[in-house]
Image 1 (tube, one colour):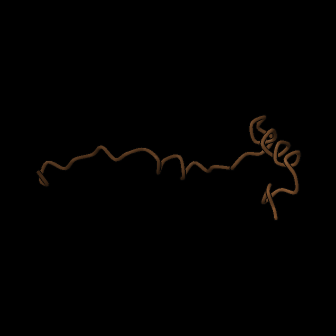
Image 2 (cartoon, rainbow, N blue to C red; image 1 turned 90 degrees about the vertical axis):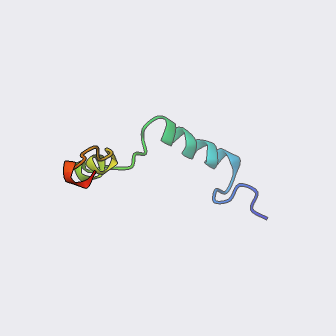
Length: 48
């Protein structure tokens, strides 16, 4: 039985969590992804 799945132990899970919280692990983002997050607020007058 793997109680700590996907880790081998609670110690390994804690080490991984600490690395995320301390910023050692990051998910890279590109400028395109950041622009996609902004909501579109343009409204065409002809559409109303």
